[in-house]
Length: 416
Image 1 (tube, rainbow, N blue to C red):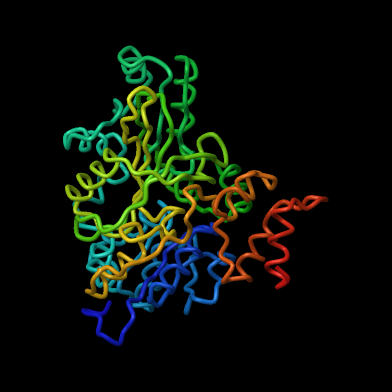
Image 2: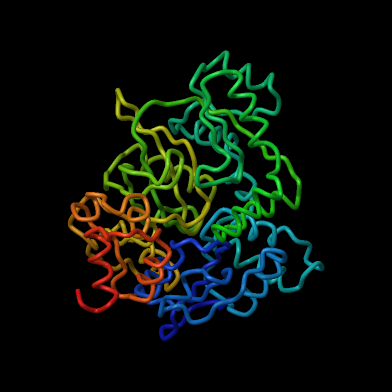
């Protein structure tokens, strides 16, 4: 890591990812457009390979994950690490916790990790759902009842207090995995057993081979039971935020109402921009209390009757909307560039004048005939045709092309 960034040097970003998901490629483009050098540590087949902006790629090997990350950090010597999913953040936490004599390169990485994520004292809480909700409540943030449940008796006691529906969540899981909504005691006890137990080998191999996501491999090998929390159900609309922060201060944020999702408990595919004082306040309080740095996500429920925002989860990593540039104060990547280069925040224009955004390729995957692909701003990285083409190749192949697919085909072929 360079101690300071000179006037003629660009900040160097190392994107750390353990999957073949699309989001790291979009972040790479955004950081490069802001004026940064971009490198990545990722598994083979990650779509960052299809961009023109990533200067060097270090291999991520799921069987030696910490060594993969340490080698990448030592080779890249970045100014900032950006983890792109929960497992990447967990790897960085684990590297920070290594004894200095266990790995010399890991010891040199500690300062960089803390600079990138926030103070080390926050590491133990950002994945602990119940502890985080308790901290938020103590800071005056609206949260549903959330507590750790270790036995069936614990679940029964929570049900007696808050009733049904009830949400059970395993720590350090994302994308809807490790989350169950239950409506009976029998469902609760079964869900408790399922999400608390380490995943089986067959399930892990099927998921890893099919998706390129090796998150479950770690749990399978360690055979460690997950910590499970029970959370009271809040009826309302789903909302989400992404935040750029530096040393406990919010630099920029984007807030959305969720319009469409890939599946019931999965990631969003269509979002509508909103402003909400409860969301802004919650993020400022938690980021300040935990003294966080980098990119983080927050999920909420907007209560039906009052419109108040209940915080239900924090994601200690970059989320799939962090690349979006939505104007001054809402440009997360630009805000981090300014912090790294010790410059003032630049005025930026929104990438679109529309308030509804269809994420590419997520909404196309959900529904190739979706009305939002035309009525909303379709977030296609047209400046990177190889990336668009690679995404199109990964979509399910249908006999008949929808209008949206035909438009994309013309774009990547240079005829549109």
